[in-house]
Image (tube, rainbow, N blue to C red; front, side, top):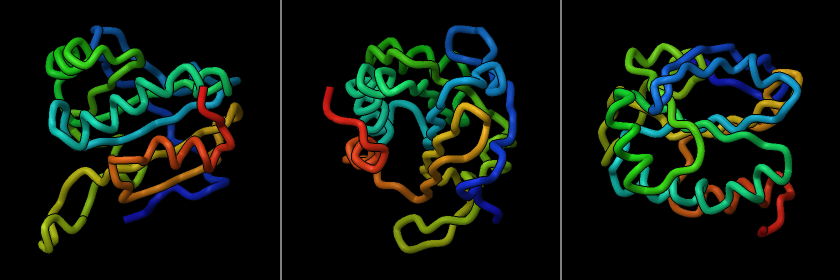
Length: 157
């Protein structure tokens, strides 16, 4: 399964958001974007990761970064998740997993020792020109945002 690497052009997408709007990646040219993929809203690991992004959003935005979370959940479920956890960034629905597949965030992974098809928890940072600046696959939910901030040189804010 191909994965994005530093220097690749990030594939464009248009996906429905939890609030019913549509988000197109290329509309954010000129600013850096964090796109993170997660398996399912309202599960423990995904909630931890989303809340870490929520709590770090001011520092990330201060460094010029916009954050998008993408899962295969339907927009209605994403809306409930965003409301329940007071998430302050767009959650996008990739129900057919086409964007996840194109970005290398869906495919074979190990789950409790078994090889399964599924969402690969991943984070990609896209620069202002639409080029992949940073790409991580198979990240751990707990502590990931802190590690990402450290790698990007973003202080606690």
